[in-house]
Amino acid sequence: MGYRSCLGIIRLGQRYPAPRVEAAAERALATGAVSYKSIESILRRRLDQQPLSTNVSSQPPTAHGNVRGAEYFQ
Image (cartoon, rainbow, N blue to C red; front, side, top):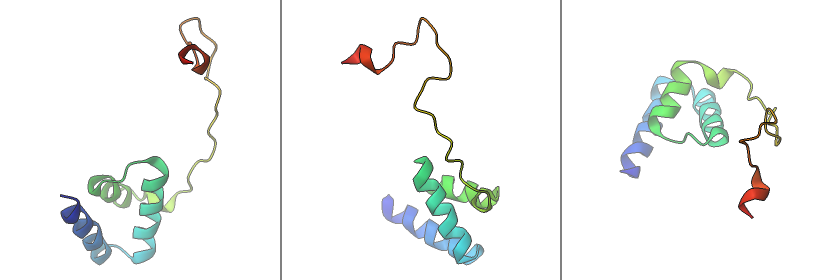
């Protein structure tokens, strides 16, 4: 099954320029969406041409009584 996915991704290189396919693959790796459908969607929606947001916070967005945090599970 992985072989067919790889062939599909390689075939995307025939429809799209190589730099776009590379950028889409980088975006897919960064987001964890590494399937053929995800890479095709990134290319179709032109997300490969937009910058990746590196604004990730390690803090929960809001303080709430039901949010336990990592300490709870230690």
